[in-house]
Figure 1 (tube, one colour):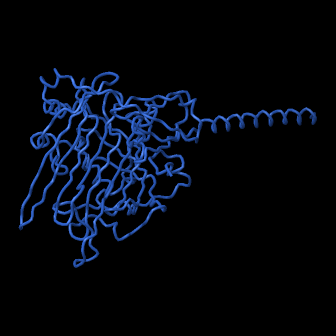
Figure 2 (figure 1 turned 90 degrees about the vertical axis):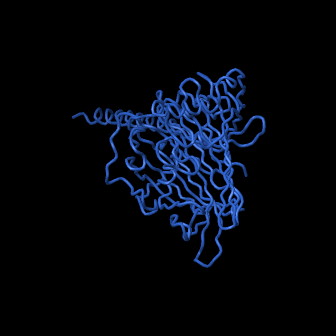
Figure 3 (figure 1 turned 90 degrees about the horizontal axis):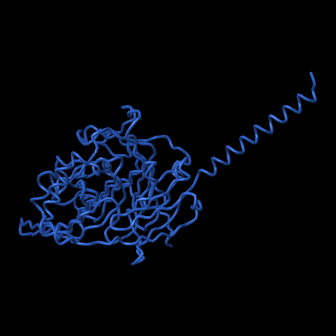
Length: 422
């Protein structure tokens, strides 16, 4: 054997292999792009929350937090696509992925969309008729097929009068929803990928138990629940339109319209059609035992004109109760179009509650926040979740533990608190 030629060939093969590995490594490194930024209203310079950032073709995205902040981890193989930034009521912005400097802060200002009121439409078609048609079209506009939702969930507390987070729990979950023809609460499956308490905020384990109507309670309601995620999903009046949800929506199909007053706010010009923006309100007074409780409902519903799909729904209740005046609960949700059907984009709910350390102590007053953001939707060619992976939706989320994946949150899309505004 010619040792010289053997060694030379081996050296060439080694160099060639190392070169391939280097190229592959660099390509992998280049494909990891972190789009980091903050979004403001161009006219007011105020931060915009619930802005959607993502590549539509990839089915992935993220939503800004309350400070307008976000980090979007661009998925591999989409380096030559455009990222779309959108919020109903504002003009969409598109940015080439190739123009992004990974990890650098980008300040983006959205311009309010020109809004108008068509006098002919307003005079001929009452706002309540638009809402009625949208409710009738729910079964047509929303998916009946099974889909997987890769989602970020968090819940946390704030004591009344304070902005400090308490017990900030974060979870990455996969939700298998069998579609609007099937019951959500009973038939949807939830798998827990990762869960953690955010150590950057105060923790008070005494406040963790679910609502029992006594120690931890929402006054003048019958709320009893242990799993905050399941409770949040059940309150979605679009997904659960044929079932009773929170007061005073109740059964969305039948109770929502008779119980509220409706009026046009504006009509937004969109890319393919127009969007009706309709305000609604309601006043409720309850008297018993020489006390009076008052509630004021204010809300807004966004409905696309060409198919009457409900895109966005906000429902806020303020109250005057014995011992408390302020926000009672507040729900926000948005659905987005994917291949002609509308899937959940985010769901958020805040409610007032009282906590008593014992039967004789005065109640402490808190807000409970629950938020679910959909990062990715897979509506075909996937394996169903296995039953051994499914969590019990009737028990606290913290009772379900999973092995910790090191570095998981560093590449996961979620509206983290980046503290960019300090």
